[in-house]
Length: 215
Image 1: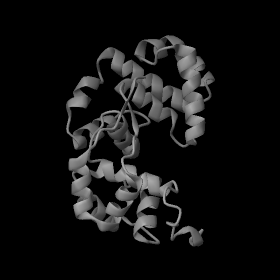
Image 2: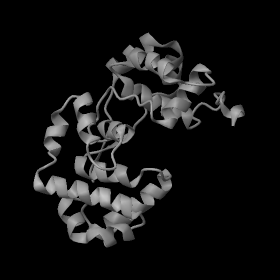
Image 3: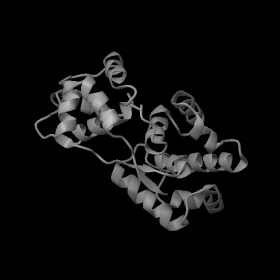
Image 4: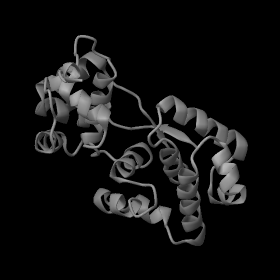
């Protein structure tokens, strides 16, 4: 799977800083953050199915085994491997079935990856969630981390929600509150997400999670 960097620059940064003083202070402190994105949409879909409901470390271990075992991650290599071998890389049968179903649909032409790449965000998400094992959050992450879309801010992402809590000192971020931030950051929600993930991950040590005491 080829990798590149999620691209953003002065235009996106100036816009976000003009919209939000707290985010502006984070951007000034952290500078430009590089996030790798997947250059191969097929492999990205498989990678995100693999990573569902497991830790990032476990995802990368399993993904490494798949790449070492198959060489190339595409419809042909997966279908040739079959259910038992795909499972043997460390996943449940359910995930193996989702991956093979996706590979079969791409191979037959039922699912058109090039068409998805050309769709607007809303249509691409709707199309991706038509696949077995792909929910809205997974589709949104594919848009950001494979297609490099600029306006993805996911309510379903725990890191983004935690970053909002930490930066804006909220004990809770419900859908109504989240939508206020999403509208504020649009059309560069993905760039805001990069900084919110950094905040959530502890990049600014003095920012703690106000909801931590509720657990």
